[in-house]
Amino acid sequence: MPSTLQPVLDRIAAEIETLPGRGSPADYIPALACADPRRFGMAVAELDGTVYGVGDWRHPFSSQSITKVFTLALDLSLEGDELWEHVGREPSGNPFNSLVQLEYENGIPRNPFINAGALVVTDRLQTLTGDASGALLAFLRAESGNDRLTFDEKVAASETAHGDRNAALAHFMASYGNIGNPVPALLDQYFRQCSVEASCADLALAAGFLARHGIRADGSTLLTRSRAKQVNAVMLTCGTYDAAGDFAHRVGLPGKSGVGGGIIAVVPGRCTVCVWSPGLDQRGNSVAGVAALDRFTTLTGLSVF
Ligand code: DON
Image (cartoon, rainbow, N blue to C red; front, side, top):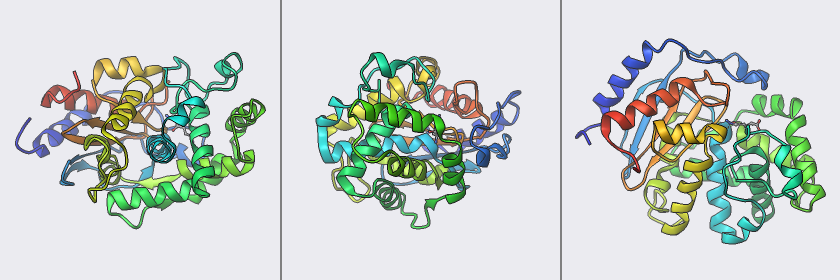
């Protein structure tokens, strides 16, 4: 690995400038549709909290499904393996908001990163904490050291107004007894969770516990080494939905994307990376983000393989 990662990030940003297609911002959430696909930021956080960045790396964006990693980790830290009775850990091979598998798999979602699985995790975290999105925000603030992190109420309201598919998923799972809270209260928590505005620097730092084998920024333990490994493994196999195989092939790291255009990736024992560019491909992953992570692992040789 180079002695400093800054030249690597500068080189990647210059290469991304010339990338021909950037995809399109998510348009199913009107509040996200106006994002500029030319924007690009990337940050790397080392284990000790040293952060390198390039481009819009301090610009807050909508975290969206990246938050699913943090709610999963918080839930596992509280209830442990009981969670896996209610959500699986197999790739779905389907789009993130798909309903098709739920009926013939008895209301148990394939994994915690498709929307159905994330709704189950948030539901259980809500039961355990009384305020799932509040617990998430407190965690992100503590790990990033940024007390200004907050929800974007406009994005949350926009999702609520266009949330029929998530509502359908939640009601359907409730019919199997796999949701414990009233669905409207759960959706409110889930949409607030998705709306957290954070930068590449914030999210790279917040994910640091996954590179430190479960240890938080203050040295305390969030997850055992074994559970941190499990979260990273589920990110690798399920974190980019029906593109997880292609992502593993190109990038070779556990990663988790969001439709705001962010992706976090973990190099266990070394560093965390967060990249942001709002233009998405057909599967909901940032085009420039995946390209930048592909170049990062190629240039540095950092990969789990
Ligand atoms: O549930 C939704 O539709 C969004 N709030 C989150 C989706 C998301 O980020 C999926 N990611 N690629």
